Image (cartoon, rainbow, N blue to C red; front, side):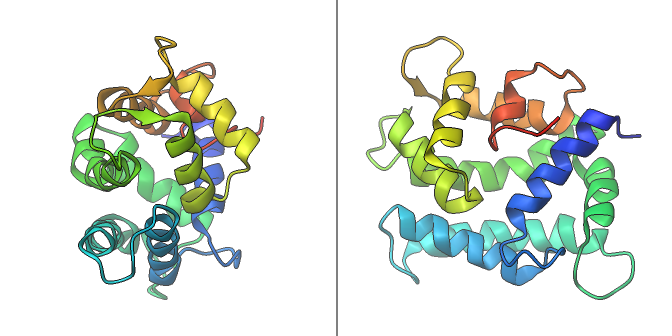
Length: 185
């Protein structure tokens, strides 16, 4: 059962994923998010990087989001999304690892364009703006919350920990709650 904080966080993420702002998420929303992300990092449509991100989004759509669709219209509203995320992701550690981590890894690979294992503020803000439509200020504030050791960059482990916290932590002040920008109270 989702507490109020988890409901708010999932509603926040739902709004970011609803690219066309029609109150539902469908396959097109995921495809548009994937395309915006790869374009923001300078990859062409059809590139191997683009294909990988699209494949991971498609897998997430097929394995997690589409099964949330309780009325069979191939669209998921916020209630279907919240209850579905509870079943597929928030209820167990394995749910995150199986369904969210592969998409997150594709994001991290794109953000870390130079392959040094470090996601800089600029790279993170670019991802947040392109994939999740966050303002530069919101993306920068999120980066500050996520940079736990204050070294000026994020590594894959920090980002996975933050992502998992977002989906699973019932704590209001968990830093991972900022992975997709500020969640309204």
